[in-house]
Length: 271
View 1 (cartoon, rainbow, N blue to C red):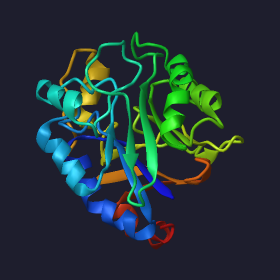
View 2: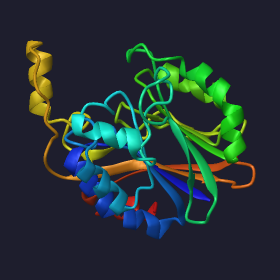
View 3: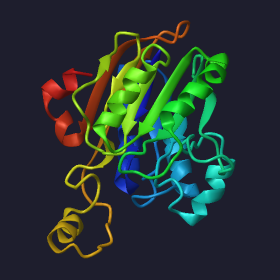
View 4: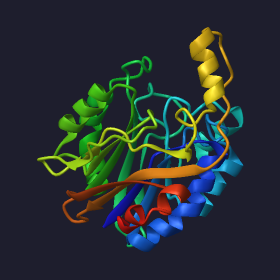
């Protein structure tokens, strides 16, 4: 079975790219489940009702979260009540929402999807490693296939998680830094991994934000409001081929698509 994971969806351009390219991706793979990180989907931070409906209507099945999950006040009831929206599981006990769920693919195959957040350069969250250790027996009782979105800043923390969970889950996908890494692999224990899936957002930007705003912050050190960049958008993510019986990953295929890239015959032939 193919599971598609889309990197952080950034604002309106990112949602537009998902709507535009998801049908093309489906034409190239028989996708059973579509997961996307949605913590930047509403104007660059947080979620709202219309934004969530837009992504679900486009064909996304599950939205994972991160440190910006709570940034839109109007999105808080969604995080609390919508079963297809996940916030990081390793928030302290008592926080609204859910950190994992069981979702049926188009084939009827069950998948457990887990949202985690890192601690290095991120915040004072509960330990994601120990959270997974404690939760795994329960998670594996619901489905053979477990996909983990690890929303973290430090490459080392994401890489460490991949070794910690190798052979225990189907895939560990890094998110948050918005730049796709070149280390997609199936690890020795059968877990698919990539340090960062990339983003669905504006091509000519600094991780999705208008470069002029970001440069002003770097040059002056004065707090500056960031706006999502305009223009052409790309969609980046990873295909995971997962054995529905064992939950083992058999293949990992990262991709980045945009109209400009797809004008290249070589780029299109990869799909």
